[in-house]
Length: 132
Image 1 (cartoon, rainbow, N blue to C red):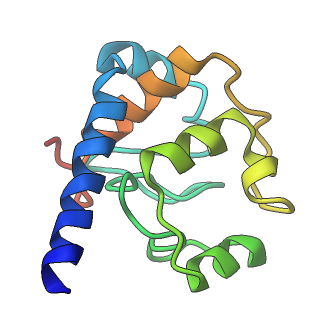
Image 2 (tube, rainbow, N blue to C red):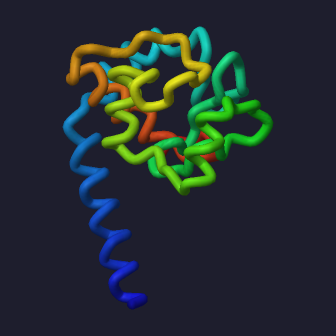
């Protein structure tokens, strides 16, 4: 049983890596400018209107300390939901479809390439804000 968990974790890492490896980090940094009004990332990142996003790829919902999350997002946390690449992609496309009645006011990124790029960009940051 323990081996199954290890295999599942490795499969998730490999599939997540492949998904955001398709994105362009440089282009993602430009796309992230749309996010900067509410979010920050990097070594000096702080919570703003939205939480800072260091280490968010692969993290559970509602894990950023000091940020007051919406009830629907906290319900997802209680269910054990994770910000994997597929979930981030869906959320960035249409936030209210993934978390109805959530706090995020942004309408979403319609272009798949932009979503891939911004996910590649945010995926390069560790939880402490350092780059991988």
